[in-house]
Length: 288
Length: 303
Image (cartoon, rainbow over all chains, first blue to last red):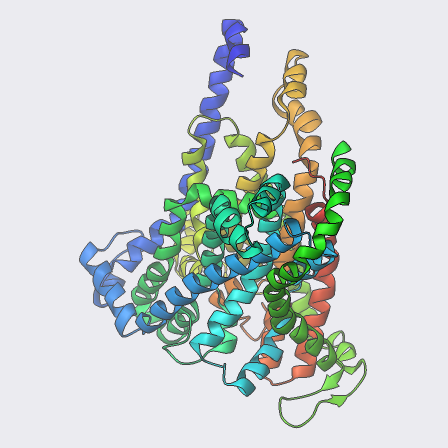
């Protein structure tokens, strides 16, 4: 790119930079428009409920107001209990899924499982159909086995939901590791378990982290499974709790609802901003 | 192309050793297969069975053949859900995919591209319900969007109350959330386009839109298929945003099939009808998935 532009006549070069400027301007404007809803969220989550009507929608309240509204959503809005449970689900679920998925990928690629491609497709295909297909039987099965409205039940379903994606990514990732690595370890007398735990897993840390981040975000943001398989404030995931908060509060305590929305979004947004590259890697690993 | 042949040759001597690892190979794959079997495939089969029965969760399901499917395609409310779902599919192909491509092309090789793409990506980290909370506020009576419309002297419509407008504005909200990730995917695709043909076309005098139409776009087609396929599949499952904004109302006019399934099953206790809706959704989803799955599962990938 750069070598070519230096050989260009000056006129062409100026045209090029004008186009860059135009593109930056257009993208910048679009970006600002994109941020308007975020601004409105911040502005209105920061107004104290008692003076909410006195402000224009576009005016910012004050930081103390935002803190007190968040405290309100956390306490009176009952988001606190759900948040702790959801953190447990969003960490345990993907962590287990990543190991289980990596195990499947290891078996298919390194151990050359008989009919490996069939088993791979079988595992992967289970993510194609919509969740709607499994909700009702899970609800009935959970009710019968005592898993309904239990943390164990939620961790189980969130783990299983994340397994196919991690198996898919890890199979692709392991395919990129030369089989000689495996053979050399076998020569040295290492067991399959040891090769998996000590060689393959450490080698694939970037992929594991990428899957973990993506799936943790997905689980944190889940509504449907939480709505269907849990009920009590201590077990119910935080997004389902936010949805309930929105229904019960509504109009008069709008600022509390908005502060609640902001509160439950902070973890995933911060995680995303902090791990943007791993996040992007996860997306591209999953798509191609 | 020599790779598969070489791999096969390399596998021949190991076929004996494969026996050594037969047991561990089953052990390593077993947890994934068992979990998927019990928690995903078994419920899948049960829902399929229930869709041919009359069942309300109590007693035993009664076999009724295709009754639920006939009801599904004759009930006006369900047909309305089907129509809304079609709006969602069409809208999702146009808006988030189109905007995503537009943003990706604009930011490709642009100084500071990461920063410029950031505003579009932040909404992706939000949950559908949070998006619903924000946009319900933006769209409420006398809300931000109404004020902007009234600034131009027009009467603001009742965004979330009138159909099909409420579905359209929810598609906009969903596009606000989803465009960024499509831009990211298209961006990865643009990065992987070989430089030589583009440079050659540049030397031949191609630039701007001509360049995009004749060179970039055709080379991006495989990726576009994946993005469009993913978008269709995602839009068919639309639930969270609608639940967060209208709960399908007022009076069910903004329901999608995913929402109808949930309501029929868990609110009306008509498990059979809910299951039939789920099966129908699954059939359509699988058909749409073929679009991109062939590519995802193909052993040789170029992009």
